[in-house]
Length: 242
Length: 266
Image (cartoon, rainbow over all chains, first blue to last red; front, side, top):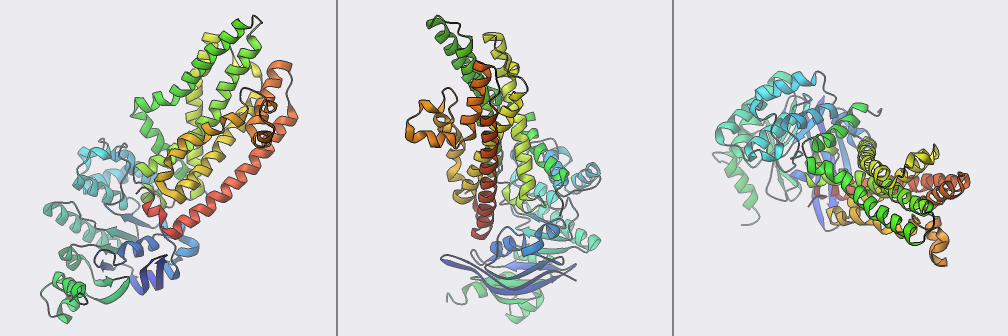
């Protein structure tokens, strides 16, 4: 079964067409990258997948549940991380993880928090208020929060933003291991092309709310006759500007 | 899908954890009720002394009014501040993509509000007894009805404010601090509705508080429970609460259409 099925999805605001009739699927166990410049429609698409935003038209099915009618059943089995959404600053890291563990009805929560603390090197940070952490530490905590319920579908917006190269590489390895271990599906929006090349099986190139191209990273690179995905991204971004 | 007590507890725990590590926040809970009580308690003493009459009844009405009206004010602030806390910490995006239902979020906010209200009023009640020899518990079991009605009033006002926050974003934050205080003149806390100009009296009578305080004065001055007024207060509360829930639901749906849940704190 596909983890995500999106059919003819449209979102328009009074003066903007943010997402323009896109359709795609993400199979269970797959990693799909959403690429596009600012305003391409990535965040809007993720928001609709999460049920934060109601589409103007089109259908979204997540883990077999219609998001329009049954989003809470899907939300129990998915999770989300974005450096642009914070965790309560006055709560300690452990308290934050405890809150989300309860929200996602995680069994043996103490054990799960200890597991995540070990995986993301958070042991020394558990008692510190989230607001006192560095940007990189906050990103690690947010990622730990996103895995607390062992989701079948993980939506990640810029998952390694603010991380130094070493920690970024560690997190990418963690995500690869998590996928291999659980067969979770991952949808990834990122501006880090090397990250997308490494993690994603397939990439959707978005521009002005439309899917302008898609394929595996290797196929896209070959199709555009380029050396890497960054050059492909620039080709597409500048195609009509030229 | 059933309501989950564990999810409700998660949100209550989230707010208790904030208070646990911040004594200024704990102190703030009791600060305003205590300050109001001190101002009005000394005023009541002074009025009783000036009029050279046994000031107990006038003074009791003022002190009981202060304590009971704080239930509405604290109840409202408890809910709206709890919601604003999520906006200020930019956490709403995480909350609304978790399995937490809006009704569960509300249940948690109302529970936190109840705890805040009790914690805020406890010191003021003790001070009223020690400084002014006024024991509010002497109102008897009817006090529970006053409490429930006034708390409910605070809650439906709060739901209205949260709905405005959904619609207008954090720009409507000032309303959280002002709306309930603005209602005070027509809540008839310290005087009966007949003391208001004729055109304003229907406004007062549409509010549960005016009926609760009429009941309070009947209890203090005539030593009798004013059941018709209390029944009217309960019926009005029910009506206003239903309206507030409908508006909350409509504004929440509207916020999901407009994308306001993503940008509410900006």
